Amino acid sequence: MRVLTVSSAFPNPGNPGLGIFIRARAVALARGADVVIIAPVACFQGKGFSRALFSAPLRRQDGSFEVFHPRWLNVPGGGPMNSVLLAIALLLRALRLRRRFPFDIIDAHFGYVDGVAAALAMPLLCRPLVITLRGSELVHGRYALRRRAMAWALRRASRVLAVSEELREYALRLGVPSDRVHVVPNGVDSAVFYWQDRAVCRSRFGISPDRRVILSVGNLIESKGHHRILRAAGGLVSRYPEITVLIVGGENDSEPGYTQRLRQCTETLGLSGRVHFLGQLPADEVAQAMSAADVLCLASRSEGCPNVVREALACGTPVVATRVGAVPELISSDEYGIVAPPFDDAALQEAIGSALSRDWNRRKIACWGQSRSWDAVAEDVLCQFNLAICHR
Image 1 (cartoon, rainbow, N blue to C red):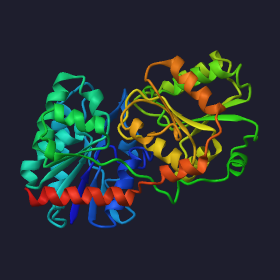
Image 2 (cartoon, rainbow, N blue to C red; image 1 turned 90 degrees about the vertical axis):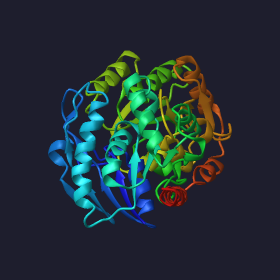
Image 3 (tube, rainbow, N blue to C red; image 1 turned 120 degrees about the vertical axis):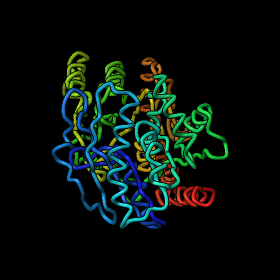
């Protein structure tokens, strides 16, 4: 099978931390299919030019597959019109590519803007379309025009894959027939994320054995809730004087001031010296940070199937996370972590405090976290691709 994967959220040299879960699935798919990636780079990000605009080559090789980075003119505040502009960029690249890579299926990630753009391009590309919903659709769906555009696109897709049951139900509400919507959760790379000796991992980050370590991993954007974790830590200092917070994640062009807000919050809460901003780390170092931590905390206001939760669990680290997306499915037992209501700072603080006081069976947590691999994900996805092609 020849697969054309389309995603403006695919990692690129200007933003290597972008959409690493999309790349992970593509790598697994490439073990059983021929895969080529079209990862358009937006001209604008936030209030300025995108960093990737100047650093991402038009074509590059990423492991076993080719990646193309055509530019597309996204208009700030342009709404669904941006999907039209993205569709034009996609068509120009895909029509040329089809001459030497006659792909069988279009694999688009995120319902908006990519899914809408792929649906617009589909009639000229004459190939079935599969759209994967990953979580941001719930945010975009608050805007009427975007919601209508997504509904139009999803109803034209041969298959809709949702990374959580919540997103499957959302697709059904948008009018997609139930037999065309399937839940395919994300996986984990167990060669990278696995149980490691906590003392050894702590020594690599210069953390003493007696510290109680809270880890927060994610892009430095408000929706990830790093500031909520800092507030919770501030409220727990009197109870746990040895508390330390590690924040792993790179700055995002769309919210350039958020990092400074976090640093100011650290000072205001009296956490100076207790909070360490580690920046964006390679996967193996993220795994070491997870193994070093007493608990990973995810305080997002919206998620699909958050990989950091599964990865932390695979490292044997208990997780405190807000009840968004697939979190309840990932933390299916209180043996693996605690699920807290979103937007409730008091409940989040209490959950973290409870997690820090418990004696967890980290090997059992790791066994659960490693139970779904990316190869299993690829197998499920290829099955849906075959059905889409057969029923075209």
